[in-house]
Amino acid sequence: MEIFIYFLAYIFGHILTAPIVGRVFYGKNIFAEGSGNPGARNAGRSFGKKGFLLVLIGDMLKAILICWIADYLKMDLIQQSIVLLLVILGHMYPILYRFKGGKGVASFLGGMLYIVPLTTLSLVVTFLICYPITKSFTKAGLIGISLTPIFTFFIYHNFYASIIIFFIIILIVLKHKE
Image (cartoon, rainbow, N blue to C red; front, side, top):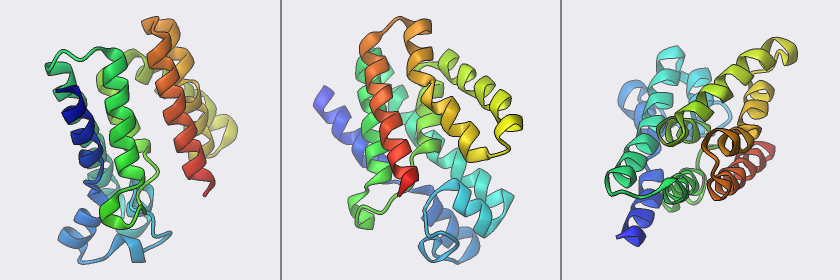
């Protein structure tokens, strides 16, 4: 059953909200708009606040849903962290879009909100502290995200889940450098 859920998580990741929102609500191809990235920030730049929110919520919900399924099937925190890793990999490198996906931040936030909510709260507090200092949404977000493995370890006392989350962070940071 675990292997099926892991496979399903990767497939869920392929559901990119930005192309759907772009076509359905705006009649546009997100890959041809702005930076061409199928993520919430580019949707916001290309379609406005409503487009940003729709994509953000959609990408968060897919991660929440698959993490909920894993939790419902009594998968532990380590297994749920693997599920989150796989949904993010599917989001970042979807076969359906020739491996050109989003940067994984919204899906990361959604999954983290479900599996380790106190870590997510710590991330948000860190972002709120760093944003006025850095004056950069991206830098403040990456600082908050980078600290999540540490928060996870100290709040949930799970070394292996923290390592998996650390690996997710590396993927997100590398995707932002592209």
